[in-house]
Amino acid sequence: MRSTRIERITKEVNILLEINLDGQGNSTVTTGIKFFDHLLTTLAKHGLFDLKLMAEGDLLHHTIEDVALVLGEAFTELLAQKKGIRRFGSAYVPMDEALARATIDFSGRPFFRLNLQLEQVEIEDMKSEDIQHFFQSFALAAQANLHLTVLYGENEHHKIEAGMKALALAIREAIAYEARLKDQIPSAKGVL
Image 1 (cartoon, rainbow, N blue to C red):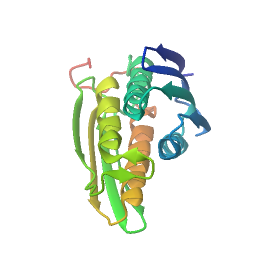
Image 2: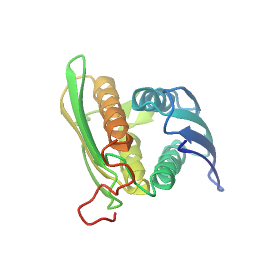
Image 3: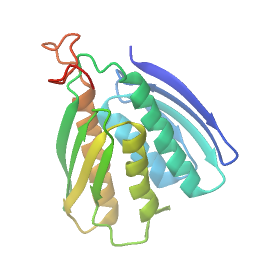
Image 4: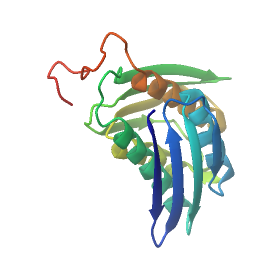
């Protein structure tokens, strides 16, 4: 079972994360930021991993950034061997008028490209720049190459939620075991 528990305590945040990548999408998320809780619950649900997360921070930005770092660190730890996983994942997700696309590669070569087409400074109880920073911080901490694009949409909530669901499905595909690979590293080089 691919599971871990990570605690992060700094002068700015107190975070406890428990994750099981081979779960069923169950989650308990408490960050004090309602929309963020909703997005993380959505990520776990559609990524089919179990997530328990409690976070407190002095500022919203610190909470959001450090949750992303801890979540990314968990993926790095649990996928360190990379043996037998598909490695790549991609998904398109519609949400009403919005359409998002996510592609991810757990290659150990972090890169990030994002275009959410956000036009408002605040969405629900989060700043749009913090939402974008979450995706970037997660990708870098997870040692993943992530491209996340909202192709079109009008409602900011729908754009972000479609993006999070697309990321969840892409992660789900990338971390799945491929029976034909068995214990092989998914790379022509033999290493990642």
